[in-house]
Image 1: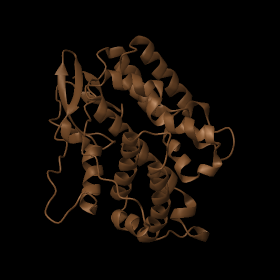
Image 2 (image 1 turned 45 degrees about the vertical axis):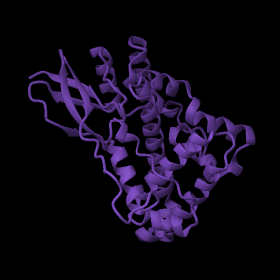
Image 3 (image 1 turned 180 degrees about the vertical axis):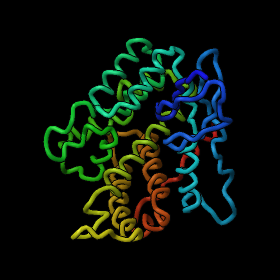
Image 4 (image 1 turned 135 degrees about the vertical axis):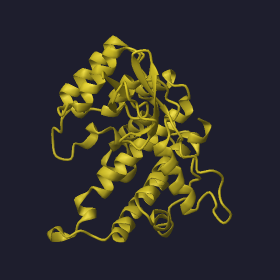
Length: 294
């Protein structure tokens, strides 16, 4: 049977499916549960059950571990209303090739080709947005700004940046032209923005906090216990949340969105994440149940 490329509308990952035997649902690597649907010769991936956690149970407030963990879990499963796979099969094929490509430079070139064919492809715009500057490569030690998620570093180590650089990076969370283009193409721009921030927060926590050797390992390479790692990371994230809450470069709504994404992801990454944040004195942030609007 013919193979059909289909693009996850949340992360732009390309799935190659058997067009003659489509599964009822499939889970993407980003955590989204998707439902394949035929659209002529093409296959679209639509939102399946978004994993709506339902109303809060008695005894669980908005700031409870249940609320934050369920926010991140349901959020990572939601399609976030960001609509359609490419209608142009050539665009879908280019994104499939990019997804399999190991070279960031070649992947970048494929994204550019996809956008040249269809500048209004939501999947292609999102793919290039999340790609960041990976194609430029790390030019000097600790040059991690090529990763889009590294924008969060301004809230971990603000002293590493000039006031103007901090302002520029804070605004990049919301004002990047590719993000604005994607939001204009989305069926639900509000949910798409929350999904985008959720993904950046997850990548920062996983790559630059939990993945940091100084945090996850003792000297001589022995791994630290999960609770010890959670406490160390919580002290960092608590300070980041406090700085986000005080950032005058962001509007009140933007501060809430950014903090809610970071807190929800941290609480999903660590089983005792919410308690660790409370012990570290982190400001509480009500989770945003943005997937419930879909």
